[in-house]
Length: 276
Image (cartoon, rainbow, N blue to C red; front, side, top):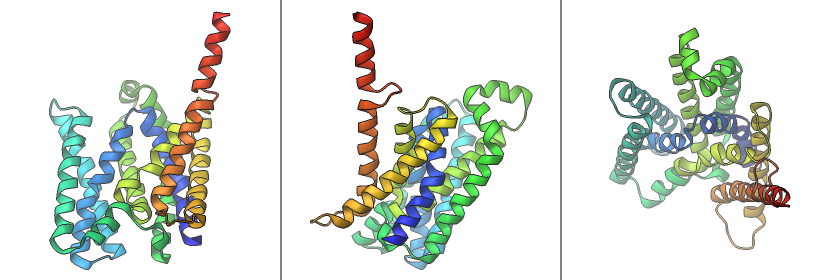
C-alpha cells in the first residue's frame, strides 16, 4: 500500500498537467489512443523477457514514440487530420498488442498488461515513475511558454518562432513517457485515467492555467488516496487500479454538479436569478 501510494502520488504530479494541456488543445482523446499505442511494445518486451520491467518499459516507450511520430508525419504529409491518423494507429496497435501477448502469454498476463497491478509496485518501478515525474516537471518548466502559446494561437507561434514543431513532438514524448510510467501501476487501459479525469475536473474549479494545473494535481492526489483507502478497507475485494480511476470519476461528477466554474448547480442558480 505504501509503494502504491508513493507511485500514484508521483504520477499525480506529472500526468495531470499534461492532461490540462491536452484538454486545452482539444486533444483529450489523443491520450487514450497513445495509451493503447504502447501496448505492442510492452507485449514485445513481454515475449522477449517475460514480465520484465526494463524490457516492457523500453518496448512501450519505443512503440508509443513511433506511433506519435508516424501519426504526426501522416498528418503533415497527407490530407488526413491528426485525430483520424491517431485513431487508425491506435486500432492497429491495440489489436497487434493483444495478438502478441496471446502468442505466448495467458489471460492473466494479458489482464496484467491491460489493467496493471498497482499493489505490486517494486523499487525499480517506483524509481521509473519518480524519474518520469521529475523529467516531466523539468521539461514543462522549460517548455511552458511555447506550450501555452501553441494552445492559444499556434499560427502566431509558427510566425514568430520555429519551435512549434519541436515543442509539439516534445509534448507528445512527455505524454508517452507518463503513460509508460502509469502503465506500470494502472495498465495501458487505465493509465490515462490519472491524466485526463483530474484535468477535466479542475475545469469546474479554475479558469486559467495558474489554477488548472495545481487543482488537477490536488484532484489526482485525492483520487489516489481515496481509491487506495476504499479498496484496502472494503469488505469485499476491490481492484485497486479501477478504484482509483472511479474515485477520480466520482470527484469529476461532484465537480460537475457543484463546481463554481460552470457547474450545473451554479448555472441553474444564475438562470433563475436572470429570470427573476
